[in-house]
Amino acid sequence: MTRRIVVVGGGISGLTAAYRIIREMGPRAVELTLLEASEQFGGVIATDASQGVVLEGGPDSFLRRKPEAVQLAQDLGLGREIIGTNPNVRGSYIVHRGHFHDIPLGVRVGVPTRLDTLWTTELLSLAEKMRVWGDLILPRKPISSDVAVGTLMRYRFGNGYVDRIAAPMLSGIYAGDIDRLSAQATAPALLTYQARGRSLIREAEHEAKKVPVSGDNSPKAPSGLFVSLLRGVGSLVDALVVALESKASLNRESPVQSITYQSEGFALTLRDGRTFEATDVVLAVPAYRAAQLLTFWDRDARRLLAEIPYADLAVIGAVYAPNAFSRPLARTGFLVPRGEGLEMTAATWVRTKWAYPDDVPLVPVRAFFGRADQQGLLDQSDQAMMETFRREMGYIMGVTDEPRYTRVFRIPQGMPQYLVGHRERAHRILNEAARWPGLKLVGSYFDGVGVPDCIRRANQAAVEVAQAAREPLHSPR
Ligand SMILES: Cc1cc2nc3c(=O)[nH]c(=O)nc-3n(C[C@H](O)[C@H](O)[C@H](O)COP(=O)(O)OP(=O)(O)OC[C@H]3O[C@@H](n4cnc5c(N)ncnc54)[C@H](O)[C@@H]3O)c2cc1C
Image (cartoon, rainbow, N blue to C red; front, side, top):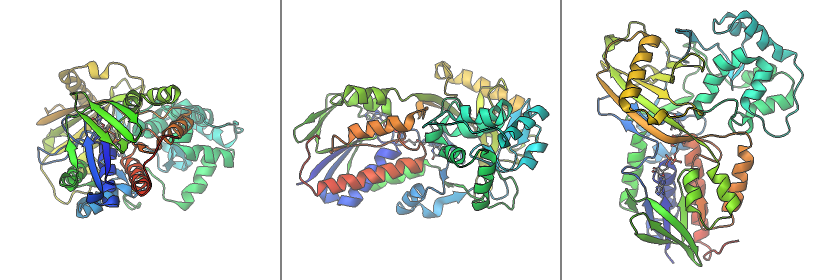
């Protein structure tokens, strides 16, 4: 019997799941429909290449050590378009009191492993440096299961180091608040170090001897923790859509309003009244949306989904003339700690960060806005955000020229927050999901927010759907 599979959500998770299901089962064995609420596919992935340079509104990179994104790009024929980071430019600056400072060499999962470089940094006062040394002698704090990254780090290294170095480096990935982010879910190495020995520094040093450290600014250091795509991450989405077009029914502007469970599968109703029946559903939407759709679920499990908070974000892309900057763009960009009185949280000098094969007479910059607890970011108009951007670029980089082109990317509820207890919460949600064998939940709110994590989860879901298709139709457990 042909399986009727509906994938809800056309971000990287949903598109990958659809692509892999068809690869696993063959197009004839499955009738696959993908329903995407918005006008375009890609979810938070948004590439603007209209100016001849790549401006990313969402992700710009894939962690190389998680191979799923690179593998997918290769499968889709984009292997030749994978680019690495610029080997001559390593690490980013940290902004402090209007000046750029290098990240001290050898910071690993936020832990300093090179006390010599920490000693010379101007990011910390003498007292703050001495406080970092405290880690070598302070007793271990018993941690039962989980703790906030900030709680553990502040105890071991003091506030100066955490606020000015560790937090901007660690919280950037999650646009999160280090004092609420779960160590277990976002920096499990810290708990491993703490379980092994008293000092995080000593344990991280030990680990650093085995694997190269991050944040190394020396040109000779091994390059390429991250990769990207020549035409932007959006080209991965485009390639998935092309690969799926003839084999599946892809629908934009098709928001699913409700899903009900019936004896032999699911019935989905769209906001415009259209209905679909499915033997299997892959739900590739954010957690808060899944909570609204899974009305047949246990109330507690829906509450757990609904309670995963998401941070609002905005990214501003700007293209400048090459002479707009008086100082060389000698790093990949900069991070802005809280407490500097600035709204921008980070910026990337796109052409300096990546090893593009050609030169262009343009300087594309992208700047991030939005911290986990920030209220009202997206209530501002684009114009107000641009004014902040220009003012802060003037203060931080001394640039007074008008950009030739700008684009504001608004990302409401763009990033799930893995707060303390997240692993336990995700585990309970997945337990409930397992009661509905025709239903798969994929996305960034379980065990990794990165694109490779989303692809891994989607691949796994596809394999499970294909396996289930070889068995008789399911009923809930
Ligand atoms: C600014 C930013 C920068 C990032 N940088 C990086 C990076 O450099 N590297 C990296 O690896 N990761 C990065 N990430 C994380 C990564 O991009 C995301 O975790 C990932 O793309 C999420 O994909 P997804 O498909 O799970 O979810 P989404 O992209 O959120 O897609 C969900 C889709 O579901 C649709 N949808 C919602 N409700 C419905 C409904 N009722 N019916 C139908 N469709 C619906 C939405 O419209 C959306 O298209 C970044 C994220 C952001 C926001």
